Image (tube, rainbow, N blue to C red; front, side):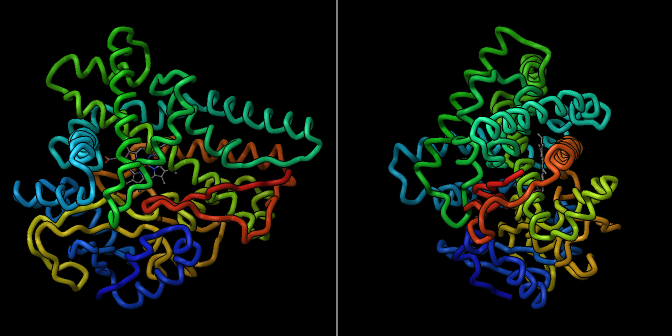
Length: 424
Ligand code: HEM
């Protein structure tokens, strides 16, 4: 089945009305084909069962496009992506691609297994639980600051994203990695550039320039850690690189890049989108206030209902195959449309109902299979602390602007809000 919804490619306006559009796509079939201007196609998997199959079938689908095409085809793919750039920008884009394409989400076993093992320990439940007091203290400091500002101004309001949802995970991941506090302000611009990339329009010189600046910063950070290693995760990776056969310099830079971007661009949206879901369903908000024990299931429902990641990263068809009733050609691109998969009535009864007690709730907001989210335990803990703190300290929390003024960000892969003014 073909679709033309690729034109808007999940922009802000599309996201506001996406769920009925996804329901219509699911009615027609489990996968939909979107034609790109270059003449190529992207397949989107809109139903839950097929999405799980896609994400787990590493024999038929590769994360690294180089494993699904010849060298010439791969070179052509890159050329197409940089049409419209000046030769200098193309050179920059090639450098960026070479470095960032070695991240966990863009590689396959055995390299993927080797690199994931290197970062697994700090993300295990036991290790993450040890961060609880520090995460609580960061949340408390941010809410104290919001209270102080409210008292000074005489109005009990804040901008939930900037004042709380964004700095909380950014501080946590920066401390885990060992990134100096004074450097963190630049991240927003850089990492937003990284997530504003769209497959329909990859040749954006402004985005490339910001990514180059990001990589330059990462190189400098690695140099500092080499000279002065600490107890942090980044120092551990730098030491592993020094041992020679564990990871290359590009793999190291790619890893840090992914951990920074994935570590905060997503959890900010769990807090922002989850709060909006509560505002949109006042009776569920009241139930949660009365029964804080529902917090864990409420967070799973927020992840399902307005999940921070709209679409998985690309998979590539390794050899001509039949999938979801369609014939797919070697080298074609395919993605799980997670936002649609998580609203599939075949898996979730009454999928458009937001229910803070929903069980079972086996959503794919964190993906599944070998690339499933490394940071899921951390994100869940940050979510629990964020919402428990908001609910207990700000019992009158309410939306501070008309609902129509709340807008989704323009970002293909993510679902997040531009701003969320609240009163408390
Ligand atoms: C609510 C917050 C989060 C959500 C919804 C989320 C979602 C996801 C999803 C859907 C994937 C798989 C994508 C795919 O298969 O194409 C993924 C992978 C990943 N996530 Fe998260 N994530 C979150 C928070 C985090 C945090 C806090 C970190 C910490 C650094 C993190 C690190 C990663 C990494 C490294 C991968 C790649 C894993 C691999 O390829 O083996 N994420 N995440």
